[in-house]
Image 1 (spheres, rainbow, N blue to C red):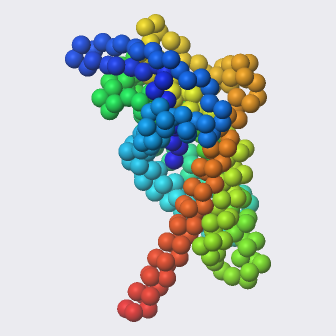
Image 2: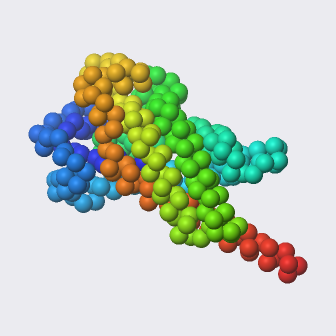
Length: 289
């Protein structure tokens, strides 16, 4: 799950629902952050350490259905392809197709929740303000506006999933072959997941930057005095490159790797361990019948 650190020292919105009016307050910004640790220190100092967990409830609400849909879809598609073509599940194109397809389905289902969560983290809006922003956006641009940012999300997540599952399945097959085993240990799954997540996270970082910029536009469009044009994904890439160069597309590389690597490692090792546990449990129940 993504988690955007919020900074209140910028443009925030105070929304009166009854009067349906808005007011912007401006604060002196502390300037640009000098790296990840500087951001953590200054955000914690200025806004409190709990602000680093801003938007956690919608993140948790989104995590469960997203994970269930994603992993279930991946396993079902992988198994179906393997049986249909009568080939091993680690054949290179099977994890690529399975991971990409599962991610498209899961991202499309969860996209509205992710947009709302990203906006809450970026603007520190209350639930009432977010509800008003969503309502106004639907009135102005229609229900499809809730899927704003889906295209760059898919541009990031589809190749991420393809690279991640390809790398993981290849490493998994090699480790089992070298160890002459039919399964990975928890540590082997953990290390393989971390390596695969690191590789995929680095390659797809530019798409993550673009996706976040697109979703943050929600409040800016709704609460701006003048109608603000929503930029296309390609135009946003051009503007970022023109203003800051190629480094703009790789902003946040260190925190992304530090988040993705352990997240992928914990997720896949836990998932593999639980699958093994329940598989053995089912076999024991069948034998006892």
